Structures are given as C-alpha cells and as structure tokens.
Length: 343
Figure 1 (spheres, rainbow, N blue to C red):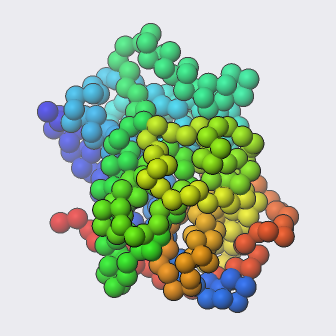
Figure 2 (cartoon, rainbow, N blue to C red):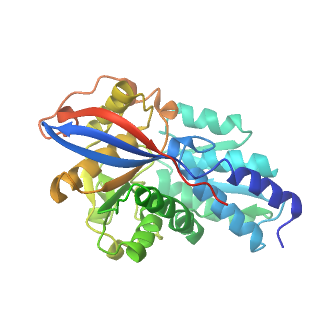
C-alpha cells in the first residue's frame, strides 16, 4: 500500500515531469529542406529525460513495497540519473548516494550535491563505470536499508517511455495529422529507445527504431567496450540488460565532434540550450531522414539542457571534419506542438 504522504509527493512530482513539448525543427542540409521532430526533455524537473525514469522506478518501488521511507537510494550513473534521483529522493525524504566515473563534468557533481546527495567518484583504475556497478553490488550485500534502482535492468525504466514518452510523441504527431516513420535516440540505459520502440512496434509497426551510439565508441555494434568519446550520458562501456537489439533497427553512429558542433548550432541559431547528446540525436535523425526521404517523419529526443556541460568541449572550438553532417545544416525555424495534459 502506497503511504499517503508518499502518494501525495509522487503526485506533485508527476505534475513537473513529462508532458513535454514536441519541437518541429525545419532545416536545410546542403540546400535540401527537411524537418525533424524532437521531444523537448530539458523541460523536465531537473532538466533531463532521466526524471521520467526516476519517477517511474520510485513509484513502482513504493507500490510494490520494494523501498521503505528510511532507505538510502544508491545508484551508479554518468550524471543525469544521479541528478534525478537526488532531486526526487530529497522530495521524498531519502538519503541518496551516487557512484559515478570521476571523468564526468564538474557541473554534474555539483548539481547532485546541491540536492544534499553524496557523490562517490570512481576512477578508471578502479574500473570506471563497470567498477562502480560492482562496488554498489558489493555494498548492497553489506548494508541494510538500501534501495538500488538498478536503472540498467529495471523494467520500470522502459515503462516510463513505453507509457509516457512514446504515447505523448505519437499523440502530438497525430494532432498534426502525422505518423512517425522513424525514431532515433542515443543509448545510455536504453530505457528511451526500448520504451518508445515498444510503443511504436505496437502502434506503428512499420516505423524504424534506431539506437544511436558514438562513432568513436561503438559498443552496441561491437558488443564490448571500445574506444572513448565525449558524449556524456550514452555508451557507458557495456550493453544494458534492458536493451534487446533484436527488437531494434541497426545502430546509427555519430561522431562526438559533429555532435558538439550541432549542439552549438542549436543554441546559437534557435536558442535551444541543449546538451551534446541532443546534437547527436539530431544528426542521427538527419542521417535516417536522408535514407527515407525529405518528407519522412523522423523523431528523436533532446535529452537535457547544456548547463551540465559548460566546462566541457561544448563551449570550446571544435575542428571541422570532412565527413561531418553539421556544417551543412542550416536551421530555419522552430515550431512548438504542446503535449496533451492528463485528464
């Protein structure tokens, strides 16, 4: 049974999470016009799409009796998930401990700490992301009153997007008389691509569903950790348990430098202060649209805002490469399609 005060708090939080606008971005690429649709996920409570997953996991855990009011929430994250659990945990009265690789941006660490959470950095020598997962597993065996969200294996992560993001997207497109031909999204935990993908497989079975990965670190394509990249929040050294590649179309590779340039262009041309992965997602959507044709309806997500990347390459000069798509992009206009509010 969900405690009354928790139910009230979760209800208030749900009013601040999800139901984000859908953006129609009109552009030309090498003179050819097109448009991409993107869910504006930086509008969520803490500025990222991870709020959806954190709320879904905590709501499910309370309803199933998996978490108690005095439990400490402990999670491994590259940043945005930690911020989401720190904020929601504070609202619900939980202590929160976040284990994260020590090469993530300083802003992410500071924001997590601003919510009163503890950050435990894990070095590359200690195993990086995989090492952090191992440390938390060992910790759970020795401590009581601990709740592990296990975002990489938790079906409630997928459900947040199957029942939320995906439904909103198709409803917003339908309000314009449109049907999706493809959806693309970078893979961190895989919750977004799997959840939206499962919804589309049911409602629009002909639509393509492409995961996106850094060209410099193609973990999805190779099945193992390879290379390094600068798109924080995706390609975390392994394929998450909730990702079933057999249900998805082929991964789309995007260079991290191209992603940085595209994110810079979205801010400078349209005033959309988004993170590097949003630039990556836009370029993946553009690549798929070039295959399907300029009139195809291709959608993605802008996963977060740029405030967590001010000390990274996002604000530095990035050299152009011959194979980059972003130099040929001219952003022409922006239109907002509001999300229907729940009854």
